[in-house]
Figure 1: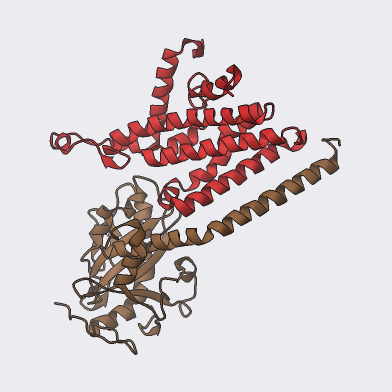
Figure 2: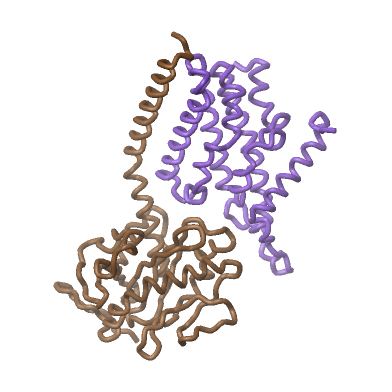
Length: 254
Length: 207
């Protein structure tokens, strides 16, 4: 057969594409469950890191997560719990969630019981950095005001500059910051050294050389945390959010 | 098994015909993934695997491939292998796959691959093609490892993530060179290696 005839070339290309396509599809299907598990475990690690908990080793991330995270909640803008099914907050895809309209958007909260008996609430945040999405988890104390810990991740910020939001050194700055000043919601802002927030909010030093990523973190907190105002206010009024059917015996905050 | 010609296919790319040092191919990825040793080695192994197998596949197909669409056929084979590598890494080496992110996908555009397929696999039988692929992959990996060794050691004082520069050095005023972590220093490091390599191999020197 003539190797350069049109029929041969078209047939050759068609058969090749079909073959390669089906082989790739098979491999994808075979590896998908394992990949999904890796991605879920990575998310669990980020959430645990916001709570300053590290799994003893790689294989126990899931167990550790399930030990500490006792309940998943979805709340609305007023702070009312609309859903508390298993893993309901963990399964929220933040990327899609932030695009929903204010009325449709449900806010995920992971409730966590620490070793010392205190309760923490982990709030996921999602926003844009310089090159791509950034996201994170903010762990709140049960007073609904103080940040207990924060974890940020990014898809492709500049290594050594914006990528440093994923480092402990930056994340640690958020610890013990307050979201409310005199009962009024004032989000923590990320500002260059030397600047001060005009509205009296508490602030965190921005990363040198990563102005846009730092602003991205600030905007992300602004966009996502502010929506939890209702929920956090309810926590302040009553440290323990009542959930129907749940036994509450939690140590009051000191 | 290893005739003179096959030996050349396997060993020449390690030094005399090194894809990075002599042919200056694959520079982009060798700058990007060499900030520390672990991703550099995983990247090297991935390139060896993709290069060796795509060479073999193309070599098997070489008599059937229509000349007009040979580049497309080569690309499809390389792309398929790269996707397989990427999927396997995501499933079994998730942390490393996150570190390497787009660079595994960019193996497709690594000029070493297309170069070898076009220059070698299209004209040689599968076994020498396999050796040629492994040889060129190794040649690339060696440079990656050397660059990553220098950058990780000077940039962070670590090797494979383990601290090797002792604490007393820091106590006496030693500082990690943060510049080594950034891409420009990788380029300069590669440049220095090429310099040393050419200085030692007179036949590579141009007028």
